[in-house]
Image 1 (tube, protein in one colour):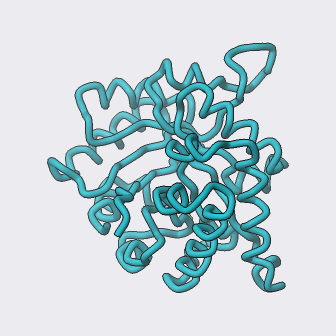
Image 2: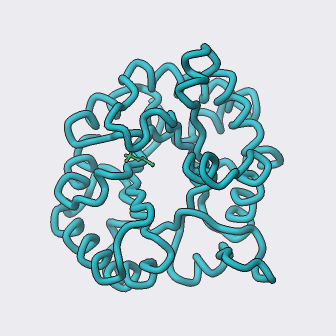
Image 3: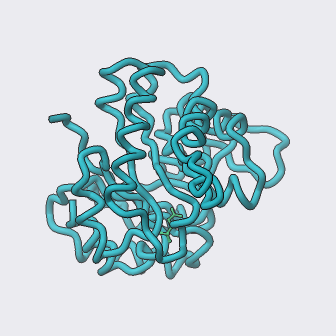
Length: 253
Ligand code: PGA
């Protein structure tokens, strides 16, 4: 058995003002046990990071992360946020290449790779997201699409740096649709991703790397998904905006 501690991450997307975000994370903390079995992470929008950091000031059970970052320390990059700025506000994690970034904002593997490596250089832990569209799945291309996203997004990352990288497999057709992958579908891809990781970074890194599942994870399907051998946690969107439901998912590991 590996020693991969499950990670349950709540991606709040473009929801919640500062006050709402502080209230949400406070309500979540009230519902978590003293020592959650999973590592718990929330990913509020940029504008609410400081408010959530403040609400978490004396709280060690919940980590803070952001949904995206640039790779430079600072510079003339209008509209971007530096990983050092995220560290400064209290983040330890950041998403890279969420499918909404890829689909709606044209982010390529090369760009996702820059973001992930920038995060690593700053000392942030990137959660690198990969996943196929419905069209790709129907064409039988799921495993090859995911393998090429993986290799492209992690190009130039060392086996040592992989200790700070988490992956998230999120089939695009399952995100925000209420249609989750079945546990068997998730396990099939996760096992393949771990094999690919072994080829890219060696067996030890492959065994140690956490691979989260994301896409319509809800309180009632979380346990079955998290029960799969290679599913090491969840990246939760919609259901993370409800404190009680998210706490239930955190308890499902
Ligand atoms: P969902 O989103 O849980 O609402 O499907 C998951 C995600 O986008 O990370």
